[in-house]
Length: 172
Image (cartoon, rainbow, N blue to C red; front, side, top):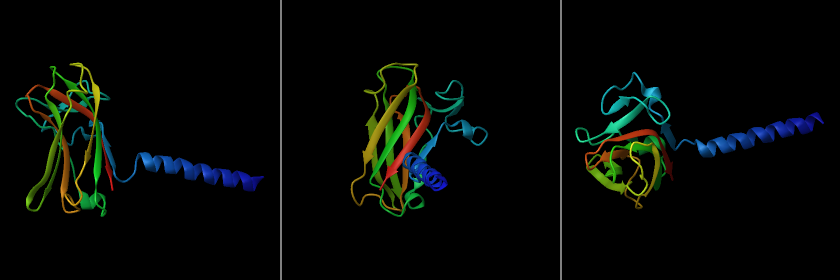
């Protein structure tokens, strides 16, 4: 009987850690920006009514880009990154929104990749937090471990956007 209980405890531990690893693996990055309070007070970092807390990123006509998620790909994985999924919560001040999610990669010689995704089809209400999602597939051989991948939001039309609870999942 005690042997069965030990086996059951081991199986439960293995399965619970497998599900956590799949959800939050080494290629998963997220922030609600609240834990950055005190570390960053510039570049569109604002305090107010965020989606999940009090701190969020903002962009508008004066500062059209949010602070980017950025990582040197070799620090994340030695295997090629082929895809990125990004989710975030956004609040816009006007419709239709010109907010764009941008993916870029820079290397020693400059930019090697840049692409934007329009979000207006996902944002149907102004002054309300809305979850947005975008997937980017990277062409084979385009980006490697020496490149810095960035994901950020662009207030292309200059209208105010607020961004909170951003998550990035990279795939090999």
